[in-house]
Amino acid sequence: MKTIEGDVYAFPKYYDLVFGSDWKAEFDFLEDCFESHVPQTVRRLYEPACGTGRLMFRLGRAGYHVTGTDLNAAAVQYCNARLRRHGVAGEAFVADMSEHLVHPQVDAAFNTINSFRHLQTEQDAVAHLNCVANSLRVGGIYVLGLHLTPLVGQPSEQEAWSARKGNLCVNTHMWNTHRDLESRLERFDMTYDVYTPTKSFQLKGELILRTYTHGQINELLQKTNTLELCATYDFSYDISKPHEVTDASEDVVYILQKCAE
Image (cartoon, rainbow, N blue to C red; front, side, top):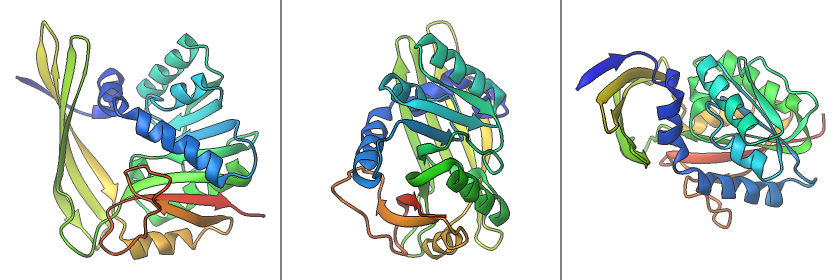
């Protein structure tokens, strides 16, 4: 099988199939969060690091106005083409999520699958949280999902999953190649094995993510003055089952609410 090395995010069609196939649980959970944690009616949404807009366009079809940002121009182009195709109110922009502000302010923001960890410095992470806070109305929430590094037990070292649409099949494998808890960075190799009726090939790239323990994410959240932690869940996305985060926790969703400025 031929291997193409590069940025796996630069192939939005395959990325969207891989990460978009399990959208329903996240979609339902987000709507449950809006109902449970936001005092006002939720109409306007923002997704930093939106990628192909796999959740944006579905939320847009449900009647929300959606805005997204991503650094990958190919993903943003793919996202906007789909929004237009479905007549969705909203747009994605090529922008840095540690710098971009949304106007007018939104009722909720979300970043559910670890994209936050692409911000590799504390300075960028704090700047991002402040940007989100400044983009939210008072009472609005930020739904932030990420993998923590557990201090009890062994952290997950690899993941593999598959997705199919029509005659296109993509098998995905991601595995840890290096973890440095002092520099707070870990590296992953990631492959897409792509199969169509006429060809097969492999896309291979590397991801570099910032690590967070339970204590480190708590310290980070203390550095923003206008976002307060109001609930935590795990990746089962069950609003009826809040999750108590401990040093053994790995998959956590933080619900951060904008307090009065």
